[in-house]
Image (cartoon, rainbow, N blue to C red; front, side):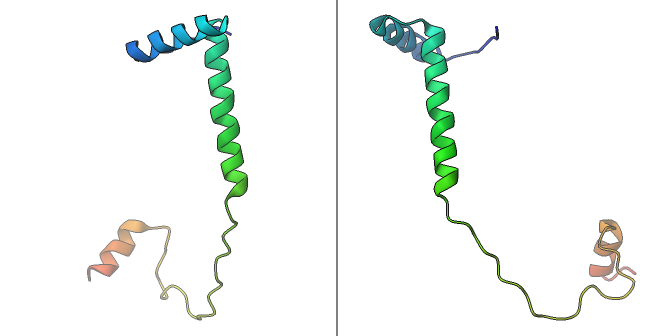
Amino acid sequence: MRTTVRLDEHLLRQAKREANERGETLTSLIEEGLRLVLARSHQQAARRARVILPLSKAGGGAFRGIDLNDSAALLDRMEGRH
């Protein structure tokens, strides 16, 4: 697939030099870099400990007549404008 990518000039020169030293194309070097970054991202996500949130045992809930889906009315109520 063909796409356009804008790169910093200095980074592009370094990448072209590296690809040339390896005997690779710039495209293959960019693909390899993307694969490494994506693989690392997936590995880090897998290593993160799962967070278990505590359950609240508090009773109650919203006050009668409060619609939590109506943020404007909720703000009015909080600011004392019924």
